[in-house]
Image 1 (cartoon, rainbow, N blue to C red):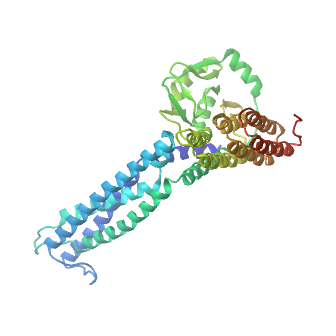
Image 2 (cartoon, one colour):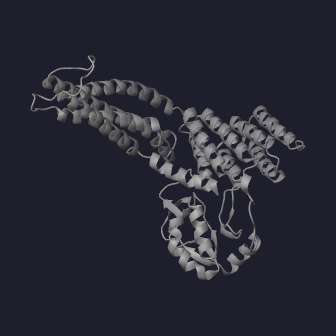
Image 3 (spheres, rainbow, N blue to C red):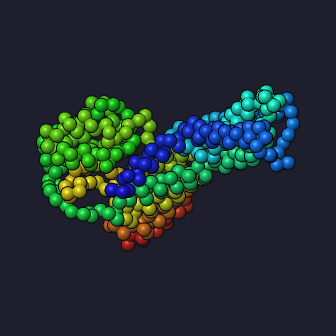
Length: 448
């Protein structure tokens, strides 16, 4: 079950990363700690207990106030510019990539660190400015703190140059698509539990018997709040079911939208339903949007959405759609061999306690190809690239049933080709790619 503990911590980490306040807040706290250190050293110098190196800035209190006020004013101006650039990038992302891609930009660590660096420097300069004042031995000037503020300002100049380059790279379509695909690949690897399936003891009723009991006599638990199921706490659900000597069958998986009052789970025996229903909220998280944690279908949907926008008449960017198809094929190759998400979870005694829905290979193939195929009728370039992607997946898929699913998708593309491509030479180009797919499957092109 370790893999599922990882998923839950990964979801928490994702929730903390997807905002513009956490990283800047941490950097502000670091700036406060740094000021506490430099301020104490400055006080020790002021009291005559320490001496500063010759390269530390020196000057009067008025000069220190001018320097610090200038730094604070300049930094807060740059913060406004950085924030404006960020808002423009988010607006472009929403228009070009779709609103669901905004969370990918919100979680970008480079943007968060840039905002945090400038805000932290501003806070450091303001606090240092306030510390300049009188004292029993004349005006107190925190020379080390002023020097540190200047060093932080120079660092911020480098951060600004990095940020401008980062934003210019971040909004490029190939970078965005590759980033989504990389995140999706990580989630696929995290959910691959094929290595520990059927490990440990297996006791009690079989999966088939339990499904019959659940369907015939299982008590339903209704959804208390509408929203997307974002994450399942598998360990909590397993302990909850084991404590009640019950079996919990979840009717939804992460990514599904749950409506208040609809059945969300079934429990057998029925007598345990009331206690599990009271505590079920501890085992799952719902929210207004989907996330990639435990919901790899969402990653496929993001790539498909970018491709569909590229194929729309308003954009008409075929090459972006081809890039999306390439990465969709790569992600399908990752799940075509050994990927087996765990549907049944047993307690320490080997009894089945939780039965959960998981995305299957057929549905993921459909998500990857159907909508793009429907939007690309009459576009041989897209059809050829889809058939090329299917050929790559078939080459790495040993399971006959899964190969049949891929064959069915290739057949649909070929039918769309014969139906919608008017130019005979273009139609023949697609047909040749279709014949190559059939050759990998050990079949031949049907005679006309």
